Length: 177
Image (cartoon, one colour):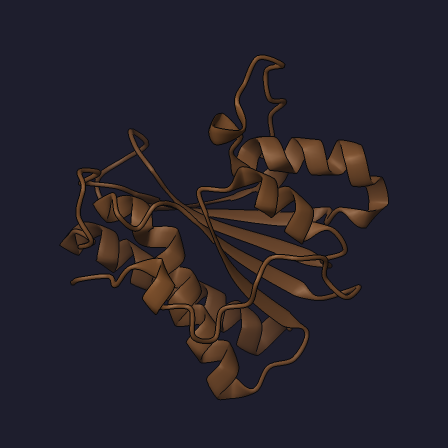
């Protein structure tokens, strides 16, 4: 499957920014020009279309790309936060992993550049900076990548995993929101 460049797939996606109190926030992370690293943006785009089709309120879907700082700033005020990204080395290609955010939040080294500041650092930093205004209910969805070379296509395995995550998130919205 060819995933179009982010500039052409933002229909339904919302811009990062502070949330009204109590919204559910879904953030897709990753680089869609590096094949399976585009899993997060792919899920965000598809989920945004689902939210629009269902007319759901109190839900924001954002493609943060590779901007970890945007995750931290955007999450402030959310009631629940869901982060979707690719991973490497945790299992077979396409495997889906779901975990609470506190298990992966980590402090960023002081010598780290902003380019290396990732969503796991954003979880730690956001909690430190915003305290109670940062969501305490954070769930991470990771899809094991197979291919991370330059390209716009998700591998079949990653696409299968992305679809599983999408179904789980749609179910969460339909039954729990």
